[in-house]
Amino acid sequence: MATDATPKFKNPDFRPIPQQPTDYGPPDLAAASAHDGLHFWQYMIAGSIAGMVEHMAMFPVDTVKTHMQALGSCPIKSVGIRQALGSIMKTEGPAGLYRGIGAMGLGAGPAHAVYFSVYEISKKYFSGGNPDNSAAHAVSGVFATVASDAVLTPMDMVKQRLQLGNSPYKGVWDCVKKVFREDGIRAFYASYRTTVLMNAPFTAVHFVTYEAVKKGLMEISPEHADEERLIVHATAGAAAGGLASVVTTPLDVVKTQLQCQGICGCDRFKSGSIGDVFRTIVRKDGYRGLVRGWAPRMLFHAPAAAICWSTYEASKTFFQELNGSSSSSGTVT
Image (cartoon, rainbow, N blue to C red; front, side, top):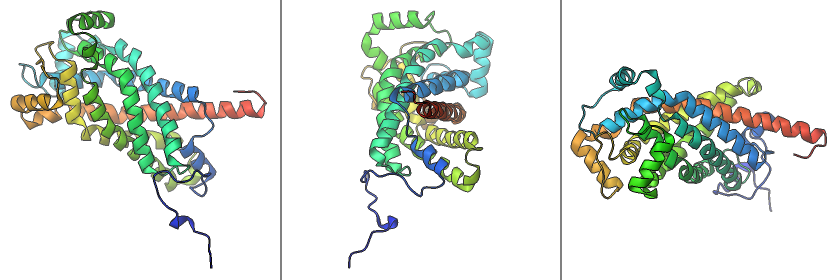
């Protein structure tokens, strides 16, 4: 005798037959997980705002991290957070903590617009209507970072060169002109392969952790999900950013070496291969050189992710309410 299959016996394949999500919690939780009803351009604007707020707020910490990682391969004594910060303040003052912020401002907005819009579209496609599909979150994050890194990498290279002490560049445009004249267009993407190899696992861990922690926190007190939404997004983002940053620090050190090669005494790598950079770091600084800067990197990514996700989710909520009010009044969005 034929019987209907219960939900617990459904095939958990990567992309099940699309269906409307049901019984994943209270209505507001399902809506928060699915984030339906937004246009592509609204995802891009929300992501752009989140990315710029995140990077501008945490830029000084990123500058300290860059100094620590670049010095690991230079003929200068390696330093910790306190020494790196003290050196910057002594030689350049507070303004030194913000050198290169213009380059990040130019790159972060477009890159995060691509990042979040690709993630949302990929998540909707791969999840098949299941907001708890961790595999879909991970793969969607990888797709998002491959696309966004192609936009951000050139400006990230400019930013890191400007962040270094005694940088030979006067500003963003001066750096772009000199690098292009001396090394060509390839210099702007010298670290792209490393960046993707770093950000692919970073983003996979980040998104899976974020979605899982967010779901867990919202299930603790679903009746207060709306009131605690900001705290949930910030906490989940901080956990995701902190864990992912520590796991991928070695590749971030390699990326910094590739982007800063040839200036301020840093080595220049002939092949530009990841293996060559790894061997050079280990030979000069030991295996500890591969984790140099992990503390400021975690101190950057944990609060940065909290800021980014909170801003992003708040922007999406604004657009959802805007679309809802427009629809109810008969206005086409």
